[in-house]
Image (cartoon, rainbow, N blue to C red):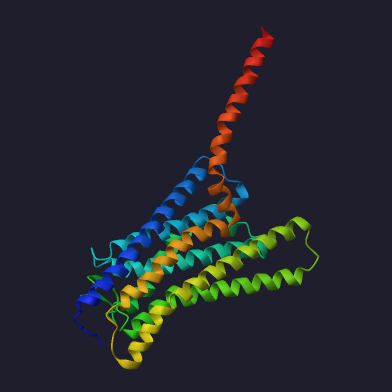
Length: 308
């Protein structure tokens, strides 16, 4: 049932406030994600990242690039109708990027002898393959159900929350499946480490413990993303029970999403050690380079003087 509700002046004011807050949070998320993504690209281009950390850093770059694109689309959602479908696909990609991080940890710990799944090229092209797979999976259901429509009271296109089959399918693909994959990977790695006992060397055990900690943090982050969707889900359940759509349903739903994008941009820096090192040590790298050059110049001058 598609409710057509005339919005009062007070509701319009509240909607403007919520939209302004979402705009601020999304802008902050775009700013942080773009800065971090550029830092990652800088370190990868100039080969400042250790060889064993390159795949982790590339996967982090995928996450921040997805956050950047998704936040930009949230900002411009009232411009093009096609963005309504694209936001659902990118939201699915965001959670799948976390699954990629966990999958890489699974390979490093459990299937470390399989070198092909630890290839840098694989993880560079993996998001593009997932987009090719996820897009038809989502659209083959959303398009027949006419789930993405132009919302007259909100002036943009998105999955209508009053289309229950459509929103359930989008939530299943974007949240439920990736979360189940993350949970399965985490449990599998935990079980494997407990079965190993004291068979591994201290260095390997420390690396496994660090990878397990990162997966645990990723699982917590995705869980928080699910929790932030509770306000919107509450209003959807209220619509199912009462048959009346709240006039600010979409504004209220997008506000936690904007908050999550902003928090995610900052939390990831402190959750993944390799990312934290290259982001927070950027100043140190720049400060050390001139010193090294000065020392090299001094050594060269001494060598010339000694030769003379």
